[in-house]
Amino acid sequence: RTENYAMTVHYYRLRDYALQHPECSAIMRIID
Image (cartoon, rainbow, N blue to C red; front, side, top):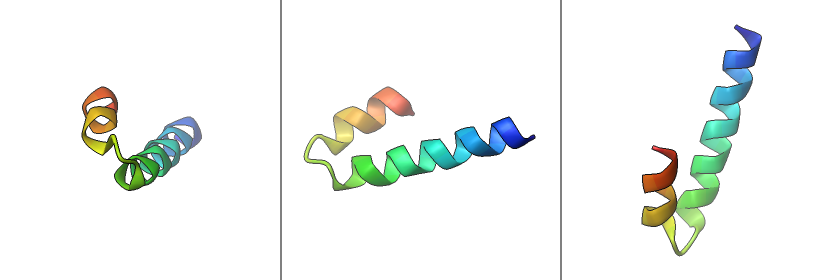
């Protein structure tokens, strides 16, 4: 459960970064 939580936090942190990035749509396509 802890590992899963850490992955979720990491995913959303990446996602938040991607949303501010000029190549947002490309990044979102990769991680989604």
